Length: 218
Image (cartoon, rainbow, N blue to C red; front, side, top):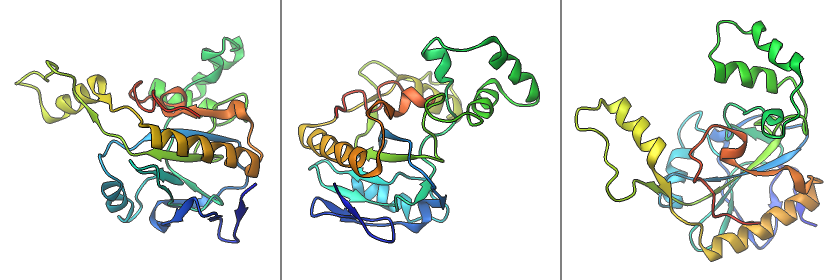
């Protein structure tokens, strides 16, 4: 079991402290899950540069290409790493009719926002872990378009962005990264008393590119 200091930083020779207060938000009163991501950038330095911006978003840990683990935020603070939640009951075929009626309470919001608003009223395991109660782990890995996939020439910048997000494929998580991920997830589960059933890839809990972290294993 890992030690955690009074600032919420892990005390371990396997973890290098590189805390960015810019990505930290409100206190996290309990940890109910872990969400595994890939960065979208090809290097740790690129992510760190982003984390240094005011009100930046990021996760609690980052695993570099060589397997080195950085802790970038306190486990006692929330970070914005998940996004709008998908309905867990739809995936697990447990939704009740009353849950669909709740969407009427949010008439001005999009379908995605309505679903998220309904989900955050629930608790884990009725919903997926969220920013409020999950640890985020980023793995350095960059998406790119497969050969032959090119956005239409007349597409607007926004349309090109959407095309890229819908068609890009994340690079595979390498062996060193997966070894570090397995160690980190196992230690966090034990230390923070997280259920093994509450560890997910980012696209499972939110609307993200399905290839993100698809080759991660823990």
